[in-house]
Length: 303
Image 1 (cartoon, rainbow, N blue to C red):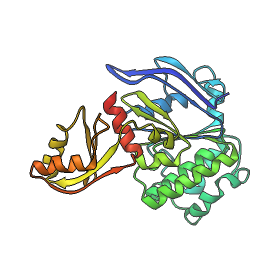
Image 2 (image 1 turned 180 degrees about the vertical axis):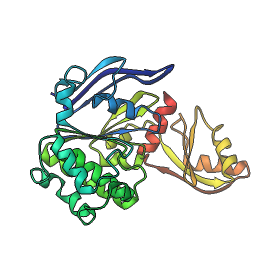
Image 3 (image 1 turned 120 degrees about the horizontal axis):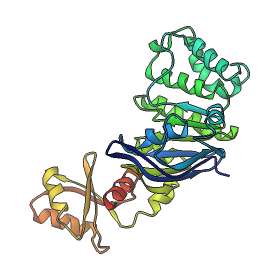
């Protein structure tokens, strides 16, 4: 039995379809990532799973419990961390933790082993009000509160948004460790670089799941050679590449441009010569291994 089973979920707000037939299956103990930009439908799906929102149609179950009929059970076996900090800002760190432990009929001491690695960082600030914590410390406190009752399933909605790079890395190391506790972790993020930290991921855009698999397998399925091009002026290079080859796909990637065309016989030399013939200054043309962001953009444009 899957820890999380989602079948054909549809959710509409007015004329906007936030989720359009979403189906996913997440195994027990898995660290699963939902990857997509703002407005893709991530928060709507997670709010449905934690029984805060009703779907228009479709079904979802957490550890075999239906999210509509068994909502009381689900709230006891699930830890939820929303995207916006939602703890009591006027309570101290320790008071927030004690409050949530009491709600679930437990104590900090009883499940201390599960939150130890996070709490040792919070302990020097245990008497500080939650609203006065830094962004990274707020997220760690929220995670502690979500874990304090030792849930079977942990639902985290964009937990690292607005957090510094070091805190982000520490946060993901903690998430990986929960597999040893048998906890299933379902986490959403708009950061494509975090996809590789998950065992499996789903790419979501406009309420559609575009692909689901391990990050390595999604990258392996990229169908055509991908080139990175560094040339100037960038705007003219971008327009030129959009006219090169059959059905070219072109997107900006930092200070470079990533380019893929339908033909397999396009080469680095041909791209370089094409741009040079247009009087553009070419610094680099290389074939590269795609990343998750490239796969996301490819799937988005294809669909």
